[in-house]
Image 1 (cartoon, rainbow, N blue to C red):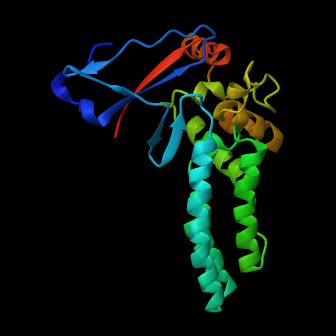
Image 2: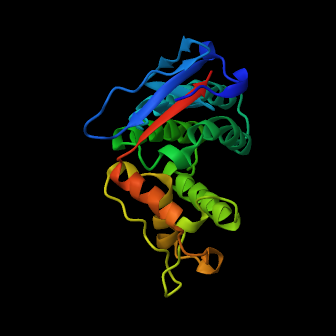
Image 3: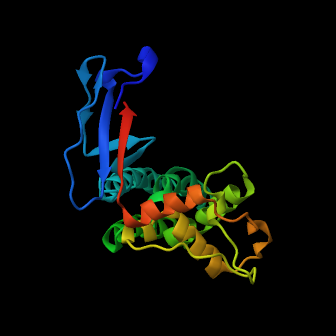
Amino acid sequence: MSPPTGGSLNALKTVEMVVDFRRNRAPPSPITLCDSPVTIVDSFRFLGSIITQDLKWELNISSITKKAQQRLFFLRQLKKFNLPKTMMIHFYTAIIESILCSYITVWYAAATAKDKGRLQRVLRSAERVIGCNLPSLQDLFASRSLKRAKKMVADPSHPGQNLFVPLPSGRRLTSIRTKTSHHTNSFFPSAVGLINRAGPPLTDYNTPPVTPLHTAHVTLTVNYHFVVTLLLVR
């Protein structure tokens, strides 16, 4: 891989993460920038989320859980000062729920039952402090995924728009064929399933047929016969 021109990347602040799901893995070719080797890492924090080379989310969920538990202390302090319940709900929504739902459409469907339980315990602790029921993470994931999917469909320039294809009946969307759990639990198959279960009018999902480019992309994703090399700047 040739280094980018113009010296736009600093080798000391750039790392490489290889996502390789092939059965016969070959060691990646080293990458150099300005005669300096790029460090290979197993995980990287990008925009507040931790991405690992196996596309699992335990590290990211552990980080989210720790941050949310720290914010519970301030919620308990508000309880001690006898603040109104509505103010505590506003505090929870702005400070704690925003952490629990950080990029939830990306990782929640692929999270294990154990990790979901850890997150749900934080939510239950907040419910006990406030004294009322709060929206579950599953409901928040579903609502945000539907909202994000509708934005993609409404944007003709979005590369994923053509993945939302209505069936001839116009009542449901065509399910995306998957062969691995990684792909099944990714955003697009999950969003299509949520839309079909919700049963909204599909007038907004009348997208053109899938182009060969997108079909090839889906096939590669399904079979996982691909290697993705990410150059990430600290």
